[in-house]
Image (cartoon, rainbow, N blue to C red; front, side, top):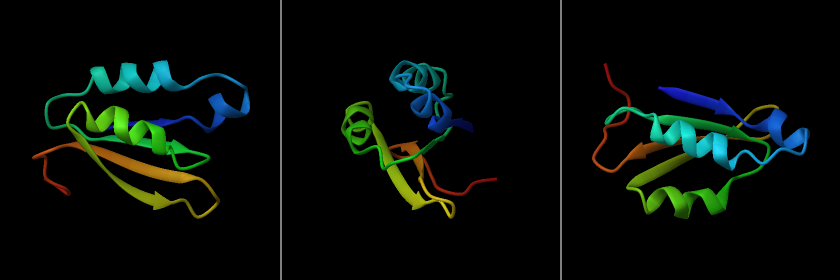
Length: 79
């Protein structure tokens, strides 16, 4: 599983989209991707849905959001 926390990027004024897309391209066929962001990344949902991903959203206890992206057909949980 790949996990990226973009809160430091956004706090520093850096655009995290290229880093996110590089991580998505590097995923294995059944590998989920977790994004941690200071806000719910709603525009990203459509971009990744076009590439066959669905998402699950959880608010973080200290603020922000944890979003898990999985390809359609990929099972939650796992071994």
